[in-house]
Amino acid sequence: MIIVGERLNSTRRPVYEALARKDRDYLIREARKQKEAGAAFIDLNTATLLDREVETLEWAVPILQKEAGVALSIDTPNPKAMEVALRLHEGQAILNSLTAESGKVKRMLPIIREARPLVIVLCLDDQGLPKAAEKEAAIAQEMVNFLGREGIEPDRIFVDPLVRPVAVDEEAGKLFLASLRKIKQTLPGVRTIAGLSNVSFGLPRRSLLNRSFLALALMEGLDAAILDPLDRELTATLGAVEALLGRDTSLQRFLALARKRNVCPPGSEPGGSEPAGSEPSGE
Image (cartoon, rainbow, N blue to C red; front, side, top):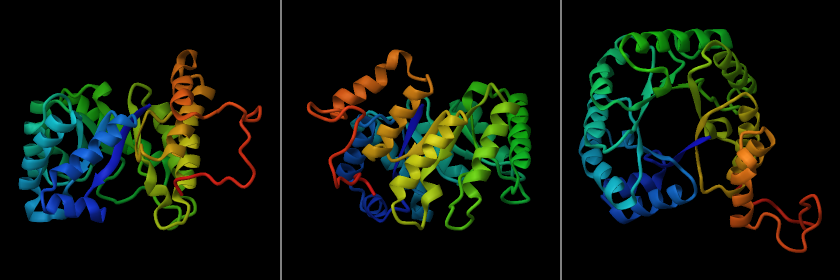
C-alpha cells in the first residue's frame, strides 16, 4: 500500500497561511512528520494561492525535497504550475492529476514526457461526474489506452475512481467500491488510488468513517491512498487489514506496527480488548 500524505493542502487554513508567509519551518515539520509516519509521497497543493501558485511552488518544492527529504505529489490543475514544479523536482514525482476533459490532457503531455512522473488519472470527462461504475471504468480504459499510445507505461499510471462525500450522496461509497472493482477487472495491470478523506467530508467522526472506508477499499484491491498518515487509528487499520488479506508477507509490517505503537501492551486481555470506557483517538 502506497501512502500519499494529504496534510500539505492549501485548502487547510494553517497550510495556506504558512505558504502565504513562506514559513519554511512549518512546511518542513509537516512533511517530516508525514514521512516518519509512513508516507512515501507528500501531496503538495498550492492551488488556493491562485496567481502566486507558480512562485510558491518555485520556493516550496526545493525546500521540501532538500530539508525534509521527501518525494512530492504535485496537486494542481494549472499546467504551468505543474510544469514548473516537475522540472524542479529531483527524482520521480506524482502528477496529480489528469482528466479526460477535452484538451487538458494534451497540455500536460510535454512535461509528462520530459519529467516522467507517476500519473494519477481521474475518472472524469467532459460529461462531468460519472454516475455508474461502467462509465468510470470506460473513462479509465480510454485514458490508459491514450497514455499508452503516448509512451506512458501502465505501471506509471494510478487510476482514481473519485471518492465523493456520503454527506452529499449516501450511495457515494457504494459507487466508489463498485467502480474500483470494475476497474481492477478491466485494467489488471494498472494501479488504483483514492483521496480517502473525501468520503467523510462534512460529517462528524471523520476518522471512523475514513478507516472503515479504507478497509472496504482494500478488500477491493486499492493500491494507494491519499490520507492523513498521522491518524494513528487509520494507519493501524491499514496494517491490520493488509495482514488479514495476506498482503503483508510473514506479517512483518503488522508486527513492526505492534511493537512501535504498543498495540498489545503487557497485561492486555487476549483478543485485544480495550479498557472499559476507552474511546478511539483521532475523531
